Image (cartoon, rainbow, N blue to C red; front, side):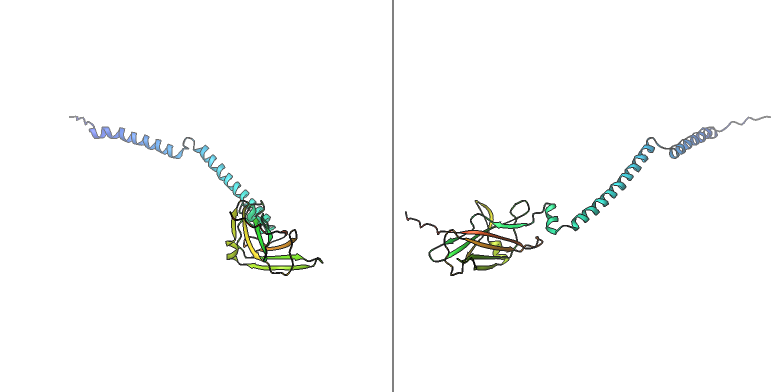
Length: 218
């Protein structure tokens, strides 16, 4: 007697499942191994950007070397000025500088401006040294006084008024020379400031003027 064996449902389903798994594995391997869409162009762009970064770094290094060589031939004050940091460059007489005569004595009224290379007022640290020199009838120099102003007193002398910011110094004169209105007095000034490469110095003349008129009481 011949018996017929029928395949079990499990075996019938196992073959298509295995075939489907094999197909999926093949598709997955092809996706992983093959280049994705746009990957080649992206890699090319990344490589170009890396090359550009290397080129820019080389240019930056060359520019820094040029800048160091330029600064080597310049003073610290010139370097600060080029970077926009206000640095005192010179000192000059401001409006109101004069020797005012009076009935009892004379007084030196000195107004000084310390400025940068663009003629902008720059505050300085001090100290300062001031000298006043007159000339007698024989044109021989005669000292009217030498004053040393310490850093604290120099900073306290800073004033702001209608004529602009300046340092205001009122100094007594010590001389037996008869001063008359219209004479010119030589002033020498030296100011120390840590930002300046060397002391700020100046020589200029100021006039001798008459005393203020007496006020008539109201």
